[in-house]
Length: 131
Image (cartoon, rainbow, N blue to C red):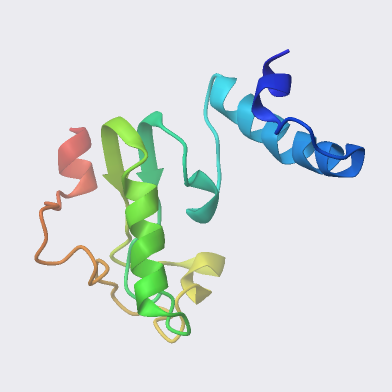
């Protein structure tokens, strides 16, 4: 069994059982086909063909109430999972329930996250890119 190879040897039954669930979940996630949705933190350690990081705009990434260094680290983790393709999305303006994300920017024009400004990542208009 693949899981037996991952669990530490010579451990008590309780510790063995505690290791099975997270290791089994990680193993299943790495072997699954298709699209997986996860937090930036949950993506740590995984490698995928393509990554889409949504909402990379001021007020959302980084969150206004969060530690900037930790937010930068999480974005780095998410962006470095992809082997071939990386897409980061942001909205120029949000409407409806999603407009409340990143308050106090409700209804205001948004900008790309400062973490991406002036770096090696180039921005393209989504509609132009898709055309």
